[in-house]
Image 1: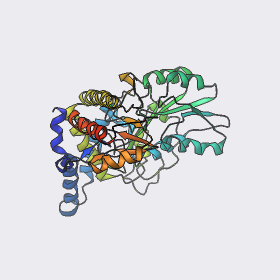
Image 2: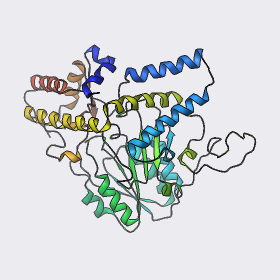
Image 3: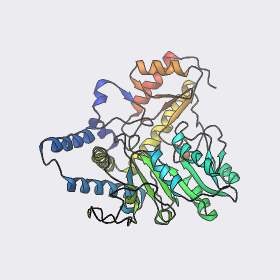
Image 4: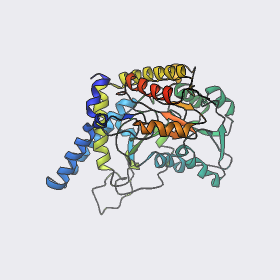
Length: 382
């Protein structure tokens, strides 16, 4: 399927909306809503208790995620959100006073607070300073000390859209015996990611943004070696090897990632994710990435031609993502104007953030740029 052919699965387009806000939450395609509706009908009218069907659906979704990340399904576990996924890592490791964690100063809080919470144990947090929305490998390397035990970074920064050089960072972490963790929520689904190639030890990712699925569902990846270092702080009846021997009470924990799936999962979310992955696979993740990066470059060029300067103007393509951000002193007014014209974007930290997906078009970009050009002919960018 070609990217533009997927537009037929998004009914909001018939209402004249332009949705450039996937970095916040994606609209649901009819592929997803129909799959969920089928499940709901089954639960209300059909075979109400059909656990085997769910197991098959869950297994299928994990296999698709594993293929996407170049790993095995046994290395994937479903959780409820990115924050709790990262807490599994933060709370599961053994820390000693003076251990250091390396973060940066423009991370979304989900990738900060789980680690700040470790300060009560004597763990120290170092923040790498950003440069105009960029987190460079060079600055991270300078900040590493002999006490640095873990580096956690977003695949894509939520505000600027800067894509981290995960391959280079993973190589550094492996050489220096530093745990490498990634918050992938702003990249996965839009950009390709190979956890083996990037030497990623732990990854957490929600499904409601670029994966175009349901809120309240996320997943983690952790390498086999990483799992040996993590002691599960929470366990439940599904964490054990012989879960269905219900009255045995044998706390023999599973050895794959599913040990972190302690009980009932977000069933609706998993059905929806499986369908969303089907839609993306029908286009191909390679084509999705190319389309998004082509769109990003076109959008940045068009904005620049009107006098607006994108935050990552002049940055190489390999550091770009689906997020295009402009900083302007009239951002709230610009945002209100765009919303009144049915253009959906985000107002974040005094900036306008656009985040189109693979099915969005250059024609939509031209329309947005025309609105900006006509409504704000004289710009003063900061």
